[in-house]
Length: 285
Ligand SMILES: [Zn+2]
Image (cartoon, rainbow, N blue to C red; front, side, top):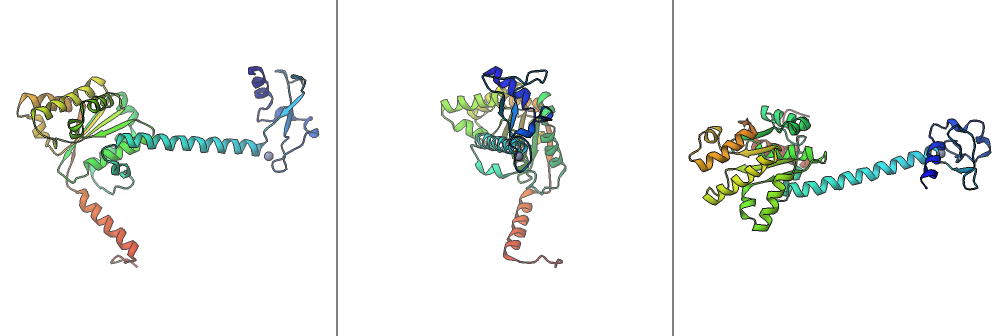
């Protein structure tokens, strides 16, 4: 069978250079005019018979285009289903985040540019194990941007996991073990809203387990937090210090300030509502 494949590969070369002078006797495609059969030939181009046959069917230009379109469609479906599977794993705790993208965000803020560049330069960030600490007040778009990075990478079939530490704390022992495995294995880990979980000895122990597991994996980490950089650089005790130190070692601080996202969303929703209801904006026709 391998031999047949080689010979067909050799003779049905889409360039058609072997067809000259011989193709008049073959039926041709009524659309592209290419012959629908070809001779078996050896490497030197001489006709040969193969298992009693001197010719074999040949795909014309239209059929080849159809083959390519089918292959592309198949590849597209494979890609979409992979992205879908990775996205549902990534945002298992918060499926609504699947909709958050740079394209949708209208934030105007230097930190946004950094997040977009991070996603664009992912291969480098990954190779050099560069993470980010997105810190700043509530409502400045940190989680939105982290989710946008995740979605941009998921489109490239990168495995991303976005979780918050409460998910890990509240998990059963088995599912916690599974989460910790994911923490080590995913290409990008995002810990959302760090510092919002219970600040207990147990909570802090879980935080250390997660951060340390990621640290040992030598893969990038993004953390979003409402804690200030000042809090993180001056921990109140050694238990917090060991977590904060690891985070600061793995993640470059990016400050989100002003330009609060939520009023932006409100305005966009109002604009959209206006469009739907046919209300014209002031100052425009
Ligand atoms: Zn054709």
